[in-house]
Figure 1 (cartoon, rainbow, N blue to C red):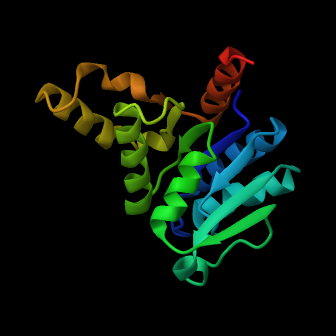
Figure 2: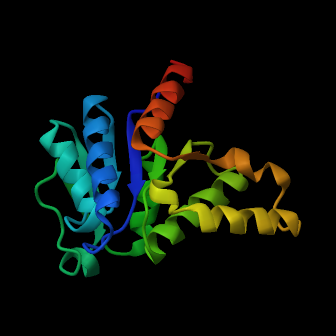
Amino acid sequence: MIRSVTVYCSSSGKAPQSYFDAATELGKGLAERKITLVFGGGNVGLMGRTADAVMQGGGTAKGIIPRFLEEREVAHHGITELHVVETMHERKMLLTGWADAFVILPGGFGTLDELMEILTWKHLGHHDKPIILLNVDGFWNPLLLFFERIADDRMVKPGYGSYFDVCDSVEQALGLLDRKTLQAPG
C-alpha cells in the first residue's frame, strides 16, 4: 500500500509557472488521498509549493534537510515534521527509505542525481518501489531519448523501461498511485 511518496523536484523559484501549478496539484492530490509527502525540506521552489499544498489540504509533510542547506534553502518550518541531518547522503537515504513510491517533478542537478540513484538502485534490486516521472510540458523527453540511446548502445538492458512510468499530467500520476495502492497486498 502506498502511504508515503517521496517527491523530488526543483528548489528554484524561477521555474515555469506550469511546473508550480503541477506541484500544487500534486500536493493537493496527495493530501486528499492521505498520502504523506516526503521531500527535501525546503520552503522554496517546487518543493516548497508541493509541501504548502499538502499542508493546506490537511495532509502530512515530512521534510529532510542537511544542516548546511537549512539556511540556504530556507528550511520549511510550516510542515508536519522537519528533520535536520548532517549530510546529503543521510538525507538521500531517508528520502528513499521513507518512500513507498517516488514522483519526480521537473528539477535541476539535484533532482537528476536523486532520480538516477533510485533508478540505479531499482536496477540493482535494492528496491522495487514505483517511480513516476511527471513529464510536465515534456520536461523529461530529452532524458527519455538519452535512455533510449544507452539502451540502443547496449549499456542498459532493453527492459529498463519497466523501472519507471511516465505521466504527462498530475491526474495520470495520481491515478497511477491509486492503482498501485489497490494492487498492493495487505
